[in-house]
Length: 250
Image 1 (cartoon, rainbow, N blue to C red):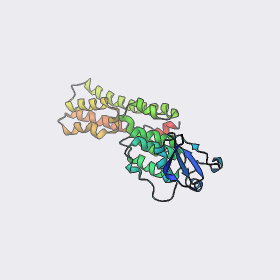
Image 2 (cartoon, rainbow, N blue to C red):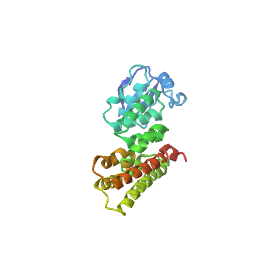
Image 3 (cartoon, one colour):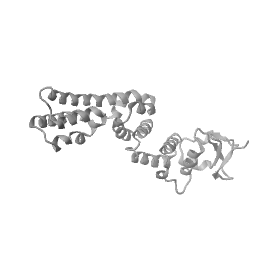
């Protein structure tokens, strides 16, 4: 049974043939690969047009090879499936398809709040440390097991150390509030602060939200001072938390 050939990449004068994991052949011009892609070594291509197997499905290669040719490239913003987009981004990095790398990195930055785990995995895998640092902090709101499952193996332990640093700051904040509770009955706003800090780790990165109750509701001077002191202590501790990239490289 013969393989299906891509309608878009089926030029008679093409001199390299690739085949996807689902059996679709792509007939590509070697000269464009040499110019636009750094990880398709021309010397390794067979001259008989024998299909070279690639590890991506046709839907990914169909988009990827459009970036190899001159002309208008696909708009990655229109790829509705972020999983499919992530496959394209990985293929672009794997084969050094330069135009695709640039636009995929831009979209990764755009979806960082929507998919912080995906972006962290991508950025860590390919050495985009500024992007990784931004994504790592956003994963404080995620299940840490889900994060570790998608990270490169060598990044798992550094990531858990990074999370542990945030956990220590949360412990400091809870300790400050509980110290106040041991000396007097705390006002309701203080209890709300304690609930927010104890409830979700990402609250430590959103101190305005955590402490707004202290200033928006009725609170005694003692509790008000305690909240101000606690916030100051936590801000100082947060500032000392190393970036994920620093932990990764130690």
